[in-house]
Image (cartoon, rainbow, N blue to C red; front, side, top):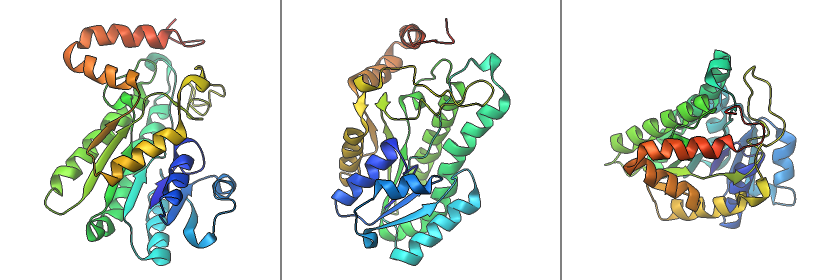
Length: 261
């Protein structure tokens, strides 16, 4: 099992969940020290740490090559690596959106491209950890929402292309989850936000998200939407989109120091 963005948050939780389920896990992220810390005390035979920037195609190719060299197969690829943003589009440098697309969308494309032959061989699972932002555009998260919509379209296309070849494709969409993604979210000028604008302690723990994703992979589900709030947002947007626009705006505007005013 390969997990990108494995150094913290949902990625780290997915690593631990995979190990608990008896998987051999390949950790991929830029922060090698954090990845090694995540698996401290685990038998080194059960994991492999591969320094990876998913926004760099050659890194993704090397990740897959290292996995095959070590374990000889790939049964699960979880495209979890991602970054967010928090700024009004009119005030945001285009490079910020480019960076989000490079990591969130192209990182998924690169890793999937090189892992796909092995996943087809094993009849394995291709997973994208997306977001409710992939169903509903979120204000002050234009680049993040765009990247997640793109991820959805890409993975759905792969599912249909390979529907007769045994490939399982899961799009998992956590709601607001306790993680560091908001702390590392990019501001309008591309700098990191630094502090979360939300009450992290009130959100779904990353470990619970990982458990639910693990179960969805086992059951070969097509999609997974987490948290009551997330499910409600998807349902309302399907049937009452104008009302959902208002509710989403009002909700996001209540964040601390919201750019929505």
